[in-house]
Image (cartoon, rainbow, N blue to C red; front, side, top):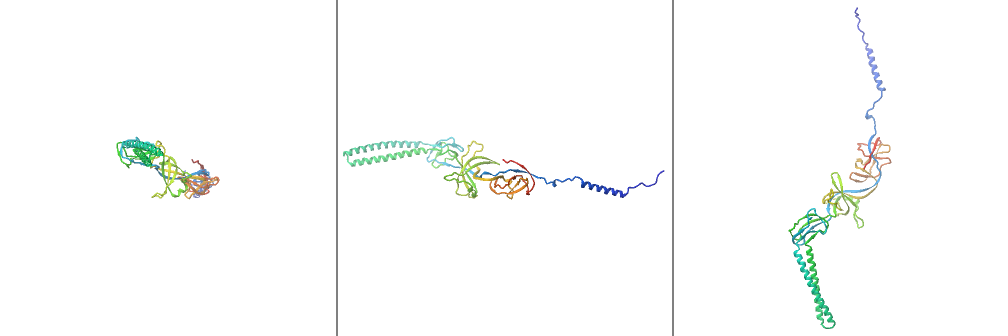
Length: 385
């Protein structure tokens, strides 16, 4: 028998109670469950690189640039005319010639003949002088016995003096002719590099012709330009004390190579016309040409000139000095602190400052964007070269 009664329906009130109960349960679970914090909510200590510094004594330098110029330069110009008979094999640009070596020889034929003629005339003058001296001595003996008059004795004395004068004159002519002969042979006045050469064997030369240009090879000068106010830091030479020492470097890209050592020899009395810079002369001994990077005349070089020493200061990299001229440090509690910096000297990317660090301070060398005193740090010590 089929029942006609309708099916039972869920009460809306019951459904509402179930929903409310679930909501309450969820809220309780959220409030009483474990709390998860985001990364931004965690204030972790900042990891930074630090450097331990100790006040020391540091030598300091004035850094500048200059040009290598010859200390000695001479133009070889003959004083006689004639054909070139011989020439030094190294008399060419870049050749090295030692002091006293013959550069070239001008035809000596006529000069040699003049020496022979003057020498022969000197021999004749010597004979005449000897004869006049003998006659005068004989006259003195005879005059002492009153055998000749005094007038004859005086005449012989005059004749002897004339021969003495003639002999002296002839000696001078011999010396002059020998000097003219020597002027046909031109020699290097000092150890030198040949800068220019304008002669060939068989070429005729006249007095005043520039045959060659030599520059000294034992010493070069570096003319250094620097601001006038930096001169006060440099020891200039005096009668009792040499000038400051200097190191000369050649620069190749980002690297520099020590080329020579020297010392300051002079301060020029004038300024550069354009830059109004002072100019020092630094004397150096050039290195051998066989080295990898020879120092050539005209080279533009870097020069570091000794300027004394700094007592009890800190040497830091330029990047560690903040924009407001302060130093950021990690103190003994590993928190960030800011110390004012007093700059005492700057040399390229190194800055020398007064010792302002406190006990336990370590210099922060990491490139932090901002620094708030008291910020917790995780310092990592690095050792700088």
